[in-house]
Image 1 (cartoon, rainbow, N blue to C red):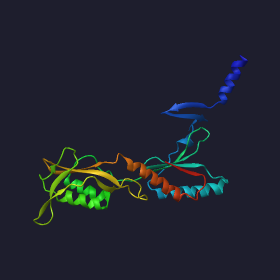
Image 2: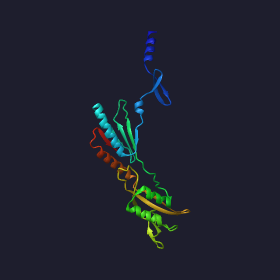
Image 3: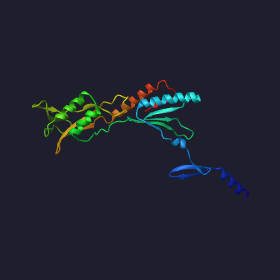
Image 4: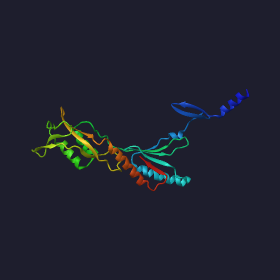
Length: 245
């Protein structure tokens, strides 16, 4: 009886924990309180590297003046469009995510054929100006329907007839590969130069054009490295920050 009474008293002192809608709560005076609520705080969501740098510098200055200790943080460059600011391990051997940076980049339709007008609009609005862009625009914008021909069986060399004046036309070889600079990462970073295979074909609805990535995604590794170098430079004077990619 004494043992059972002691166990009952100990049980009364321990918080009651229940799972509600997939979350764990303990009760204090019949009020449910989320367990580990601090760990579940939503990170700050921003879209530019400049804002991330400013946030880190302001946070460091505030924490240092307030507590006398600089917090340990890691800037993780996850991809060409995402960067996360996280803490080192906490008491639960987990990390708190403080900020999530996601670049605002246009949705570029690649590896598929587009009608002539859609292709030209995409080239004008989603690619930076380069010499190869001017060539692609000239060919795609002036090619005459039913004049595209394939040479060889390698799927690379093409020939088309384009308008060169009010009444003049001439045959040109479609350039391949072409080096273009689409908007694919943060605007603070130099946009990557990517090799594309430029293809055209005749169809029931006229000429269609397409760009196919031709570097196996190597541009992503170069861009991640560029983001890492940019952040290391901008955060060079801030202590207790590690930039990783």
